[in-house]
Image (cartoon, rainbow, N blue to C red):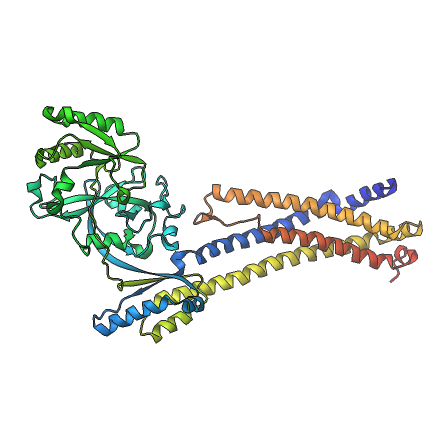
Length: 524
C-alpha cells in the first residue's frame, strides 16, 4: 500500500474512533448488548429444546378404565393394537408404545423400611428409561450403567428420596434394597427375620436418581413385577419351596475394596469341624446377571459343607456374616432367584412416547374415537408446553433480528455523521486527484478494523459473563442462561461485517459521485 494511503488511514482511523475512542467504546457496548441478547436467546432455546425432547415431556400415560367389564377391556386392548400400526405412528408422530404396571411394596434398607410406590415398564431399554438414567438426573456418586437395563433384571431404579427413607444418604448410596417377603414358617429355616415370617430378600439397585415418572419411588421392568406378584409359574420368593437351592448357597455381594476384610472375617465364623473344606470363590461360576448392581464389587461364594451339613449351620454362618456387615451397600447376601415366565397383564397402563407434541390434540381425538379417555390435565399441559415453546422460538428469533438491526442502524448513523464531517476532506482528496477506489478501500479497512476490535472485545466480555454465571450459581437445571458459541452468533457477526462494508461502499459511492467543489463547499 502506498505511504500516503497508510498515513491517511492512520489519521482518519483516529477520527472515526472519536475523542478518546468514544465511538469504539460505544460500538463495543452495542455489540455486547447484541451478543448477550443472542446468547440469552440461544441459551433459553437450548433449555426449551432439551425439555421438548425430554421423554418426560413427550410421554403420555393412558390408564385403563375404572370399570372391569369385558367390553372395556377389549376396547382398551384393541386401542393398544391400533397404536402399533405404522400409519398411526406417522400420523400422530409417536415413537413407541409400552405397557406398564403400578403397585406398592414394603421395602427395607438400612435397618428401616418404607412402603414404596413402584412403576414397572414392559421394556427398560427405551428413551424414557435412558433419560431417567441421564447424567443430569442420576445422583452424584452413582455410576451410570445403561447395560443394566435388561428386561429380565430383578433390579430397581430408586429415587434419592426413597433412599433417604430407607436410611441412606448422598455419601452412602445403597447397592441393594430388600423386598420384605412373606415365608410361612421362615423362622424354622433359621432365617434372620425382620418381622414374624418376613425375610428381606435383596434386590439390586440399578441407579439412584433425583426423579422418576409420576413421582414414584421405584422403577423397574414388568418382569420383576410378575415375580413380586407371583404371576410367574412359581414364586421365586418362596424359601420353603427353594430352600435346598437357596439356603445351601452362601453367596454375598462384596463391594470393591472390602474383599480382604470379608474373607478374613468369614474364616472366623466357620465351625472348626468345617474349616478344612472352606473355600471362598470369587464370582462363584453362577449366572448372577439378573442381580447385578450399579456399584462395583464381586459375588463371593462361601463353600464349606455338603448335602449332609444341616441347613441351620448354613444359616448360622450367614447370620453371623450379616450381623457383622450390616451396611448393605458394602456386603449383602444375594440369592440366585429361580424366576418364572413373565405373565403380567398388559392392559393396566399404556405409555406413548411422542417424537414431538405437534399432534397431541389430534391424538386426543383419535383416542376418544376409540372410546379411550385421556386425562385432560395431562393433554392440556402438553398443549401449553408446545404453545410456549413455539412462542419462545418466535420471540427468540425476533430478539436476534432486532439486535442485528439495531447494530446496523448504529453503524449507519455513526458513518453518516462521520462522513458528513469529513466530506470536505474527501473533496480535497478528489481535487488532488486521489483515486475513488483507493478512498473506498481506505475507509473499508478503517471501519472493518474498528468493527473487528469491537466484536472481539464484545465476544470476550460476553464469554466472560457466560463463564461467570455458573460460578455464581445462576443457571437453570444445569443449563447456562447464556450460550454464546452457536450458529446465530457466527451469522450475526458475518452480517455485521458485511453490512459495514456495504454501508461504507454506499456512502462513499454517493459522496464520490459529487464534484470536489460540491464536497468542499458543502453544496447539495
